[in-house]
Length: 596
Image (tube, rainbow, N blue to C red):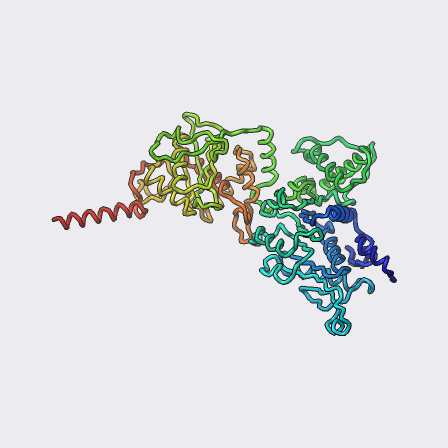
């Protein structure tokens, strides 16, 4: 292939033509072919050009379906940007070394298979970098250094990102996995912004398949971070359709529980996606025909490939970002059930009254401890009813700014209906007051407070030794007929009790036998997952305090009927108050002996 200067300049401007003439890739059959951009890739290129013309730096965050061709598009784009222009540096960042080296292998393959006239000299090429520049010998002999552009690869956990070079272009792949690796996204992004100048030529691309409820989803939902959010749904793939005529149009299902789910809602989502990916569709007829072709393909895929499982379709072929994030996680609780509960709450439009707690121990009246406030931390859906039993689960934290919240969850019995919920960053001694007066308010509810955290332990100590709360949970030894003074108050979550808590709560959710009203609880349930170490807990960067409180409340509900002997109002043996009193008595005895 012979190029003159004019043709070369055209290829420097037209990425589409450049790919067709110079980028060779392997197709699914393993055969080499020139890269012809598909519909999705062409749309991305169109958006890229639009944003470049705006004069602002390009900042994109793409959430993508699997096998959509996004990574090929961006690695080719970055090779094009650096291999044809001088003094341009790019960095490709992956979640692990294998993925990083895999991207560099792609780049080097593009380079080695390039047309000679489009293949710049390289001074260095290895697993971590490719430096487009003349050799040192040639540079010294001719005084021409060459392009002096480069592409580096790195892993997200590297502390050296941005320390060696200034980059014009950065690509971060599988961004949503970073929180699962314990990476602080905010910290890493600050380092990246220091490495990539904020000028109109710079490009930062984050792209990933979603990984559920974590900090990467929060970054997606942040409308102030300056990133354009692009969701690559299954609609972006032109092969996911079945052409049908008007005579073959079918009536859409409206019921979520039907074989194909709520197709009316799905149709609205598909219309929105079609308008984004296929702006060339003209008129209502063309758009409607495309939508019906997509719905027909969806039905056939559910019937055949997925054996009638519409939830599996939502997982494999999400139509919205919400579907993608919700169904991608290894959540303990059924995402489908959580979404159903959220829809139910949206329809019910429940509006709890909110209250603040007045921490004044001189005021003992439980009916006056909480005052109504617009931004209160206690939400009450139903006031206490005389003669009704209630159960409360609580998870206490240490009350440190930026730390976990202390939470309490109130269930009405026997219907297991949520009637109140408390959530706030609060000191353990104040949290003990909240629990005492809230429990008294709800007819001296059986109160279970988790002991695993220091904050929870401190709250239990005050409930026992200061408030003398009369219905505080403690484990009963079946072989001991009476309660001793060293009884262990509070709920202890260990490997066995955790399994029981999760099993019981999951069964209630699946069988619709608990009435959850707190949207905050539902949000935490989405990110309550199986971690890599096998433990069920909140995904990195998320919280599970309300989930724990709700599960403890369920365990309390199971034990309300168990009679508990009266507990003397004395400090349990070995507790801090017990030692204070014990040491006090010892001092008094010594003083008495001295006087004698």
